[in-house]
Structures are given as C-alpha cells and as structure tokens.
Image (cartoon, rainbow, N blue to C red; front, side, top):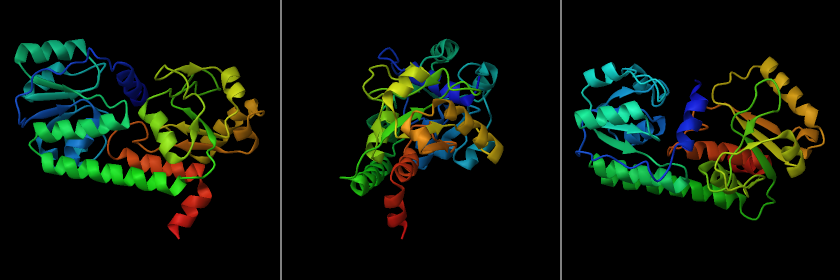
Length: 292
C-alpha cells in the first residue's frame, strides 16, 4: 500500500471511537506510527525520545536512521516489542497494535489532526505529555502567526474556484478523491485564498466523477502527489489526461498544478509551508510582489 493511501486511510479512520489509552507521562521511548506526530515531537525538541518510526516518517532527516517498524497495515510487532516503547503514537485504530498496547500496558496517543485546530491540539497534547508546554505554546503561536500572514496577503482578492485532487487513477481522470467540508485541506484552500469546489460536501474525502468536476467548473486544479517524481515526461502525460476535460476553465487556461512535496498530505505544523505554496499558485502576482 502506498504512503498516500496509508495517510488517507488513517484520515478516514478518525472517529470518536479513537480514544486514547492511558499514557504514563513523560514518555521516554516513543514509537511514531504517525509521521505528522513524529514531526510534532521533533518540533518540541524531543526527537531523541523517538526509538522507532513507521516507514512513512521522512522528516526531520534524523528520523531516517531510526529503526523502521513497518506501517499501519503491516506493523512489525516483534521489533516494536524489542524496542520497549512506553508510548505508541498513531492515527486511527490498528487492531494488532491495540492488543499489543493492552497486553504490555503501553500508552497510546491517537492524534486527531483532521483540522488545523487539530494540529494545534496535537502540539499542545504532546507538549503536556513530554513536559514541553512552553515550547508547544511557542510552536502553536508561530503556526497561527504564519497562517495569519497568509490570510492577510490574500485578503480582499478574488478567490478562484479550486479542485483539489488527493488521489486518482494514474492513467486517466477517474476515481478522483478530493477534500470535503471541514478537513484541514478544505481549510487550507480557504486560508490560501481559494474556494474549494467540493467544500459543500459533508463527506471528509469524497470520490468524484469527471462529470461532477465538469459541473463545478474549477478555475484552478491542484494535484497533491507526494510520491510522484515529476519529470517533464510525467508532467506532460498528466496534463494530456486533463485535456480530455477541456471545457473546464482550469484546463482551458492551463492552470493545473502538481504539488509533490513529501509533506503535502501530512498535517503537522510544517503544513503552513504547503499553504503558503498553494497561496502562491492561486495568487501568483501577490506571491511575486511579496518576494520583492
């Protein structure tokens, strides 16, 4: 299973039933199944407490040398036991990990970062667990300040209608997964100065048809593709696929963008970088003026 699908599966698993198991604070040996919470822990200056990570933890670079314990779909339970964790950090529920944590009395933290406020809460929660409250306050304040600066830059400007593609058939425009109302991706578009064309849908991550996309007539199309190596040939192929929907304003004006940053689907404090990037794509003249 690809890391994009792992992230999306974890997002879809977020429910009120995802309760936290008791955590014996402050934890000293953390296994991070969730790449976003791994980033949060490191932003609080506690990277040294992470003893194992999932294969999808790619930032900061120092985590690349930590023992790998598989992913949500195939956790290496023997290796996890050998690492003697006192805290498991994950998104959603994984039955085998739940059983393991109960049997060995390992604390579990399930982050709920479906919204930008959820990112802040994850920082605050980890700050309390790791006794890094002051640093957590600093990280949250910086996150909010940077978001506000983006909002200010685009305030009063015309808001283009945006189609956000999270995943789809790689060979054609089909089975396209997008973001609905209330998700951090929906909030991201609003802050960046756009309008989510499917932001009226109550499903967090609906799958939409080409006909539905045509009906929405997006001005801009943004594809989030963290696993794609975007060379000239790949980009030409992707653009040719969209040409089949040439009645869409975004296709007619060639306002189609491919964002391949490794964190473009990882809801952590670093996500403000992606929001700034998207804002620049939606309002290129404003981004150019700001850089001068």
